[in-house]
Amino acid sequence: MTLSEQLFDKAKNYIPGGVNSPVRAFRAVGGSPIFIKSAKGAYLYDEDGNTYIELINSWGPMILGHAHELVEKAVSDAIQKGFSFGAPTRREVEMAELICSIVPSVEKVRMVNSGTEATMSALRVARGYTGRDKMIKFEGNYHGHGDSFLIAAGSGAMTFGEPDSPGVTKGVANDTLTAPYNDLAAVQALVDANKGQIACIILEPVVGNMGLVKPVEGFLEGLRKICDEEGIVLIFDEVMTGFRLAKGGFQERCGVIPDMTTMGKIIGGGMPVGAYGGKKEIMDVVSPAGPVYQAGTLSGNPIAMAAGQAMLTHLSENPSVYTRLEEIGTTLTNGMKANMEKIGLNYTLNHVGSMFTLFFTDKPVNNFEDAKTSDTALFGRYFQAMLKRGIYLAPSQYEAMFLSTALTDEHIQTILDANLESLKEVV
Image (cartoon, rainbow, N blue to C red; front, side, top):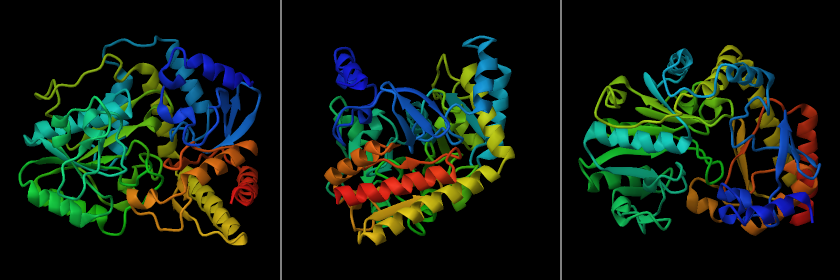
């Protein structure tokens, strides 16, 4: 038995399912999870002494690779002055100013401690600002584990959501309306059926949580038009895409500006952090400026702010980071497509910038129903074949891969060689 297997067995005695986040349990891909001991650059090192080139990067934030010296130094310096104060600091102000200068939609911002906290807070603010109760979300979009977001699709565009987890009440579900991603007509039908009742529409502008799915032409523009006409707050959840697909997030890349944006991951350089922000008039309803309450002892803590300031300053001053990420993403995905052509496969590969997903289906994937046509058992075998060759992928068909600038041309070739051999092995 490996040390990782021993640790997993022990963990199951003290932690529900043996993990602190469900996807880590490897249930979607089989086998036992790998327990990580350390990481540096493009590599993970496990408790059994194995080394992996990895394509998760802590689900997005390690855009420069693991333990980058700039972030490492910022954290080390900040720790010398204390861990947490529960009081305002200069760095919070500087960090807020930096975010507002980078993200097109953000005129004011509030720091929190996770992406889930950011989306929960943004929803409450949108409701408080509009005086309305209902929201629209999209099938397959994940916005954290807040009750309002754990709602499965109804039987049609006009149907109320059903709770997708025990512990979520029917009352919460009744205020959550769901539509298929990329289906503007379904959104319009929901809006028409609930006139004057919808506070916000929230979505991942590029979805990373049913695998990588791109918005079709005109979809985001159409949502912006509906929200403008109906007085609805448009919220982009850029916890994954923010500062990754472009310096100012996907909203900068696509030119559609939401009313509010939720952020996480990268703004802490990998430290636990999140934020939500938007138009001044919306954000000024947040306490103590306004009546909508939200608070957190560790919000804006100095360690996370130091890490985030180092990361965002570097990204802001070095646009070459994004040029390189585009090169890596294009080279890797083009190589994977070429590999599939060599062996006569026609699986779908969706890609934007430094994010991608190989779906084990020959159907184009534009929404959650499309994504569910994937052969998940085959993905599980592919995951294990890649792992055996030293490549660590996201352990689910329904998760995007994230690339970093730590990947060299040699790393890319190693990944492509493993991809070809793994596909030959499992198909």
